[in-house]
Length: 317
Image (cartoon, one colour):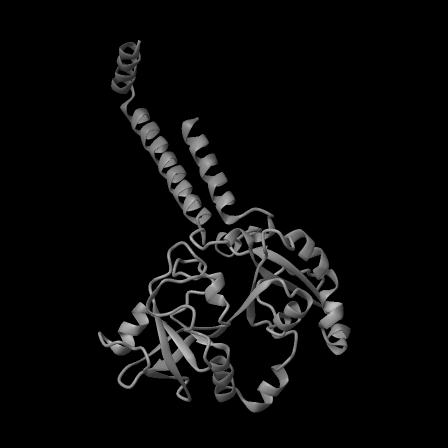
């Protein structure tokens, strides 16, 4: 039977070689599109899965709308929120593990005695290394960020600033003004991750610092009048606040419901007169997968896979 079909196929090739070539190329391109899209989707679906407890790790999200704005547009919930929200979350929900991550600068100036570079700097709470247990090549995750003025470098950053010498205990200067001590060196983050260096990574850091280092950098590099204006203001959304919910404790659904009046309880009345604030939760792996792509309610991977399936279907026809 197979030989019969093969003979017919060869006969059709001889009769219409051009049509055969067009069909073969079209089907091949369809298969390439489908397999490539599947590979991307499978890659993104593994985002941050190597971190233990990632299924119970969420980000606080916020949406703010100016009451007197002439534009009738409702923005999406975003993962960047005021850092002041962390203290109130600890107060309202003491059983939740929580950590902040704040971008110091995407091109922060950092220098050793002999080398300098502009790198992505991220300030975090010590609990950040409990929620995301990174692999340390030098130093200890338990103590690396517990002391003020501490900095943890990636292996690539350590090599760039100190060469082959051990950086532990040495000092670096940030923003040409703030001195910090190197307390650890970490291996590259396992990909895919929103902390890694893939194209869509949200926080592709080159070094981690304690929160006080970021505060000192901000004071040193910001005009005092501007600094006075932004301190404590809820429309200054500059932090990523991670929440780890316990297996037998508060669920994401329950916490989300209780966040409905979070703004009313904690946002200053003066800010509430001008702006409406809503808070919610999102899964950490949604950062890399771009959930609700272009306000469709679908992830970018789902859209890509659907388009690739359509291309393959047309190629088959």
